[in-house]
Length: 411
Length: 177
Image (cartoon, rainbow over all chains, first blue to last red; front, side, top):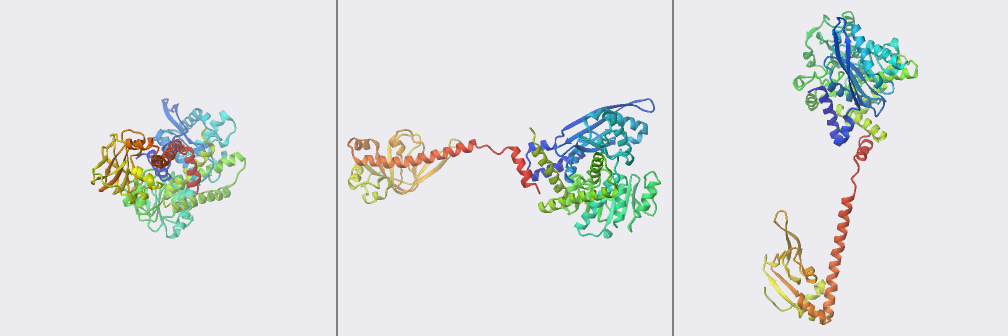
């Protein structure tokens, strides 16, 4: 099952329980606007390459649309559309005044020079600049993009529209970016892990954690959890998984990766496993923070962790979700678990618009509050309606978007 | 079908005849006869014409109608002792809209339309009282039918809540926690 099918299925599962009519489901799920653009560039070797870029603006009932830009060879319209709708529910669950959007280019950034990536990013802005903007649709980093791409994006956008730092978030701190934005998603996962564990009556020190992925999300999440006294027994990245039953020295792992171009390859003092084996470890908390679709109906029966936090987008297929739910596993869903990133993007946008720098401690404090409020609402809804945390999160997201849609009207 | 003597002592229990004087009852009985049927026998048949007013003296009759769709016979109502039937054809001859058959062994009082007209021509009060009493029941049925029609009409014209307002109440009431 593809990501977009899963997203629609989770939406429909909640809509069924809410008894929404087919027509209202169409109104809530069909994107407001979908754009596909051609990006022709002359590569360093003189070849002409033509890439395809997308921007799907899903819903703007609650505010300007917000969502990342993904550079990945598997990007297509279906995937971007699904991710755009996830952003609509995600911004609603954490109650920030945004709608949902997503964009991307079907490209493998590792196969291109920095000059080529800059050109491609600027050409993409040329194609979509009149459809986005600080009050309309605000892109952000996603898979394959980061602060540098956002800086190019901003620079190119400002050529058309003048000074507009709020047209994109996830910018470098040196260029209107917010302190705390880079760590935000990983830190948010950590904050929510802490909340969830205390609700479930578990102490961090007695909680063994397996964390898949050591990129932007995984590394900051590991650092936060280690500081909060969780016992991280397994980490992983593309090079494989690293397991130490007594607990991994996370700061040593972070140092190792920093001096090894971000990779954990060769990290010593641990047993080497595969990424698939990491998922099946005997731990209390499993955090998939890398790819989507890693927990499937095939491996779900072997997954031992009673608690799963979806730091990645859509790591659990709906089949696996049902199996794990029936078994009593608690799954904190992606639309809440990784909402820290978009939340601090909102803080960055707000700072840009008020021309005032909040500083790191205020950003962290407000992030903690936004995620805690979101978590408590989802937790209460889940208990009140006797549904999974995922369905509860969709109830809240759909409810907020639905109310804004009703109040705004469609005439 | 057999004719027997009139059971005068029971006539005061019959609503249709309740306000008759002894003289008026006598006049009516002079044109009426009692008839008996075995269980299951047809008293009058759907789509056929006859112009009698029937009053049940003993036993129970069933009003039966053949369904257009399935051809099955459906019992619409039962007529208990002292109730009457056939009054529509009696005053306005037309094919019977349903059959009446004996559910049990029954004894009925039959009043023939032609004979009744002779009472009318003779300006006999029994004729007018019978007409007046029968019309009361007909009027009551007409009123009930009118009310039902009005109900059906308002049900057919009532607008269901719009999809938008249904959604609004879901979002603001049921799912606003």
